[in-house]
Length: 475
Ligand SMILES: *Cc1c(COP(=O)(O)O)cnc(C)c1O
Image (cartoon, rainbow, N blue to C red):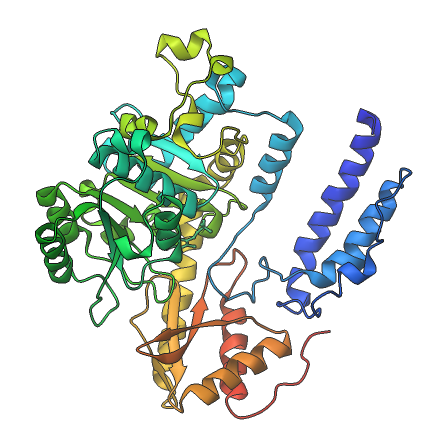
């Protein structure tokens, strides 16, 4: 493809995306293809000869699009938002165009310096503690996902707790970590990857609002110490995946400080709310945290992947993750004046992700982001009032920011029926969880274009689905 051909096809692709975003509300939200249906339409062998670009785009429309679940639909209320936005898509495109591999400062100084700078902006936007700013001993880095961020935090904590011995000797002492029963599975996965395993992870009981109980945490730590185990990490959650519960960071933080444990805070979904001063209560106690992460790729209009990970002491992280082979030695790194982000993450290579984050922050402005977040939260509040006004339904947990957990009072069967019927109607997509061993419907408001009318339609259909089949509302 010559630069001129690229220009022409590039325009076609951008047009296609613009059209897609303009019509995304018209598709059934959840893809309806059967397993294997997409593959059955693809040739068994790769093409030997070049194919015209138009054929590629046609197949995207005809083969790929039916197999897409439309995360960008304003009727997408499932899981959590995975937002994209115009500025973000364009930033991503530029990143691909530059094709930079930013493992070292020297391999593209702008890639590193823009990232450091934008993460300082983000720390200001969320009013994070000063120790997460790059002017301190800590700083921020973009990871692919919250799972990776939590793994890096765990590895840094492990190395710190063993005074540098765990990298040398592997897992040689009974290290124990703590998280709540409602924490994300990525904490468990990080324990497995780090070679510690499920048995070394204590799942602490939660309170009536599904938040970690500090009294139980303190008891478990005491029990472990008495048994000769070595507590090293507490992973707290701000906004659990099931119900949006917020662990009490201040009490947990005091325990961590007293016990000298690394406190990692996973705010993957909810963290963005702190852009609004009135929602910063969710971060009360964050000054105790040694590390923190949240995902702009969930609720801050940056397309996947983009997780912002902050650490109090960057040396704790690099001690765990830095290895210097001869072929990566260079003058800039040896000067000590630059950051090499390869030492802050699992892979060596890294993409220029800061571009899309920078584009989003500059295009929206902080106020623009606040405005959308407030609208989402207000819509969720409104939904709660509707649930409250219908005696057949009840809240299953207190609303947490943009997430509403609710259920029909008639039991699991009818709630399952609501899920199945709304899903097959194509008009909206809800998912579920289990709380107190009951099936619970989750409505997460966070798609950029979701407006009151979409919520109204969703609520009307949910109520209807409790009593009858909805039929096919979308073609
Ligand atoms: C979504 C989520 C995760 C996982 O995020 P990835 O970036 O996909 O790894 C972890 N923790 C919480 C609280 C989440 O909401």
